[in-house]
Length: 185
Length: 206
Image (cartoon, rainbow over all chains, first blue to last red):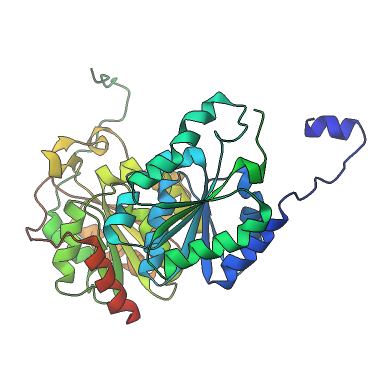
């Protein structure tokens, strides 16, 4: 139902938050001194984006295209900062060449990918990149960890963050459509 | 086939692209020792490496074309007390002009961008770039929300632009128009991991 239709019906039921785990994830990343949150918006990252916008002690960086977030994170690391990138699976394709910087420079790197083109996808345009995410990231030396259930979000994010900032790895956390729900459009 | 210029259109600028980058770039930057630099690939990597010498206060790309501005933004946000200067070529910048829009929105007070614009892809055989065919990167920067911008076409304009680079309290953009002549000639260490570690050790002591 469109927003207008809701108004006409005289009913404005508040939309349930739907992503309680995302608040925990944001709080966890902040507790681990992540201060830069960059993104091309996606519904799967809505809570994280809103939290970063409302956070006076963090930078919320709206990217024009996803690969900028890769370079941004490397620049932040040069300066002793921690910067994570959030994007939809379709944005992974835009990042390929810039991941050379992460691999060649042995930069720690942490990205969060909201999956489309995966479990239960209803839009065929999303399928090619969704299915290519893991092979592409593997080819560029990025380790992938998948999260299917809300209770796995924090332990997996913690493992990924440790692999990135203590072991110097590039790690992608895939928020799957089992976790986020599949879109029918 | 390229579009013909109509008679009523503005003629192309005639006095552009005459400065020698090997003199103009060092003059624009001045003392490099208190600045953190991100340099784009090809020419600007050599411009910056040449003025920094053995210092480790710069990181220069040798690939990842289009990444310099975003990398500089990440560094500037992580090091708000230090002046960060990004040096990038016209060919590199045209590849990711959207990164100027991101800088316009974030507007970090300590970030300055210098585009060394020779109107050509110098590294690959001096093919004409967009900027020698009517594209104006200063106007793109202005339209991207960057409020402090200048184009430097001659030596007389360098002093004011140099002051803006150092003192602006918001992201600044200087378009340095230079002749399509070679950058300084020097051998580079192309290991990005070593360069990253040297930069971090120099800046952070770790």
